[in-house]
Image (cartoon, rainbow, N blue to C red; front, side, top):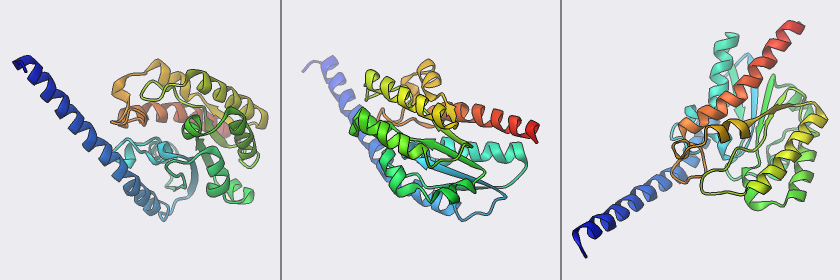
Length: 235
C-alpha cells in the first residue's frame, strides 16, 4: 500500500467512524427530545399550540430540540404576541399519516380549542406507504383538523432518500386536500429545494440539521405570521 493509498484508506475509516458516532447520537436524541417535549407540555401558557407530526416535529437531526421548527414557532409566537405559549408537541418519531390520525389526535372538539395547530407529516409515508393509501389517510386526517391548522407539503429530498416522482405525487395530494378543507398550506418543498445543500442535513442525510430546520421554521412562520395579521385586521 503506497503512502497516498494508506492516507486515503485511513481517511475513509476516520470518516466512517465519525459518521457512525453521529448516527448513534441521532438515535439517542430520539428519547432525549421526547423527554424535552414532555416537560414542555407541562408549562403554562395563555396561547395554546398543538404540533402534530413525525421526527421532524420533534426536531430530530438537531442535537438541541430548541433548534427544531416547532420550538422556533413557539418562540416567534411569544415574541410577536407578547404572550406565554403552551406548546403541546405530540409528534412521534417514525410516525406516518395514519399513525397521526390514530395515535396523536385528541377528539375534534379538543383540537378546536387550540389557538394554533401545525402538521408536518409524510416523510415516512414516502418510504412505507403507497400513494393511494397516503391519499386516503391524509384526506381522513384533514377532516378532523380545524381551519386554523397549518399543513406543510413534503420537503425536497436531496439527501439519502430521493423519490422525486412519488414526492411530487404526494405533494399534489397534500395541496389538493388542504385547499379542499380550507386549511393553510406551508410550501416547504419550494424553500428546501431552492436552498438544498448537504450542509442542511444531519449525519443520516435524511433529517435536517439545525441549519435545515431554520428553513422549515421560515416556511411555517411566514404563513403563520401572515395569518395572525389577517386575524388582527378582521378583529
